[in-house]
Image 1 (cartoon, one colour):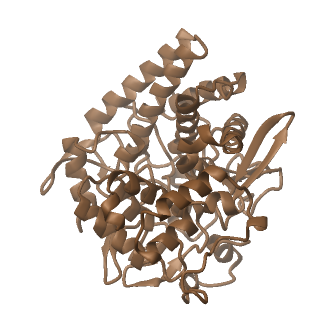
Image 2 (tube, rainbow, N blue to C red; image 1 turned 180 degrees about the horizontal axis):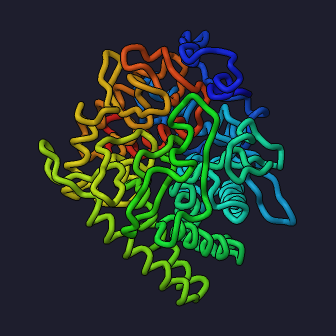
Length: 471
C-alpha cells in the first residue's frame, strides 16, 4: 500500500490531496467494533483481551470505551508477523500503512503489552522475537531507521547513501538505536529472562557505542552521509549529506529527528538525553549479564561525557520561561527553540524516564513547548497540541496530546487531553498521524499503529492512576 510520500514521489497527487476528509464509521449500533474479525487478526493474546475487558469495565463513556477497544490491540491485530527461525522467535512489525519495520516504532508499538508478558507465554515470545529482529537489524546497518522483512528494496533505493535491498530507509536517528535497548532492558527486568542477551546482542551493543562515538565527530565526520532527490527540504541533508556544522563538544549528532525529518542543528537534545539513559542500561547489562567490565566502563564514560555536554550546551535562559532546554544545538552557540510531536521530544522526556516530571528545567521547558512560543504548537477550534514540519503547519499530532497527558500529574489537564482525543478521531475510532486544528475529520494516516497503541497505553495508565477520570 502506498503511503502519502509514495504518492508525492510518483507525482500522482498534489500535497493538498494527502489529507483524508473522513466520514464517520459508526456502525448499526453506533459503536460497532472496528477490529478485524478474530480469524483475520495477526496475533491473539488472551492477556491483552483480558486487559481490554478489565479496563473497558471502568470506562462509563461508550465512545471512549469503543476507542480504547479499537486502539489498544491495534498493533497485535494488524501489524505483527510472527514466525520462528531455527527454534528462535522472529517478529517483524510494520507501522501500519507503511509495510516496513522502524526500530523506533516497533518498540513503541509493543511497549504497552510488556507488562503482560509474565501472564502470556505467547506474548512473551512475540516480544522476544521483536528483540531478536531488532538485534539483527542493528548488526546489518546501525545507521538505518527502517527495514524490510526480506531484501525486496524500497521506493527510496535511489537515495544517495549506502542503500541496500534489506533497508526501507536509511536515515540516521539516535533514537533508532535507543529504543531497542530500552525494550530489551525492561523485558529482562520484568521477566528475568537473560536469553535475549545473545552474543549477537552484545555485538549490537558494541556497535551502538561505536556509532555514537563516530557521531560525536571528534575524529572527522564519520562514515554516514545522506541525500535525496526531493522537493521537500526536510527529506534531504545539506552540505552534501553531512548536515550543518557542529563543534565537537561531546554531544552526538542525529542527522534526522524521530519524525524522520532532517535536523537543523545535528545535536538533537531529547535524543542525546535518550542516549544517556540507554548507555546506563548497556553498562548494567554488561556488568550483570556478560560480566564485561571493559564494555561497562566504556558505556559509563560515554554516558557521563554526553550528560555533561547536555548540561553545558543545551540549557539556555529564555526571556519568558527561564532556563529551558533547546531542541537542537550546534555547540557553537546556535540553538533551535521548538519541540516536535514525535518521541523522544522535550515534552515526552519523563515518559522515557529521561528526567523527573518535577525537574525545574523540564517544567519550564514544558510550559514553553505548550505555548505559542513554540512555533509548532497549534491551537484551533478542534483542539490544541504540537505538530512539526513533517506534515506542515496547523496539523496537530494526537501523539503530542497523549504525551501531554502521560507526563502530567494534573487531573484537570489529563481530563482536558482525554476530551480532545475523544473529539478528534474524525469518527473513525482510531488515532491518526495528525488532524487539522480546525477540522478533526481532515487527517493524515488512517492506519498508524504507534499512535493507536499509545492511546491504549494512556487509557490503561489512567485506569490505574486516575480511574475517576474514566467515569
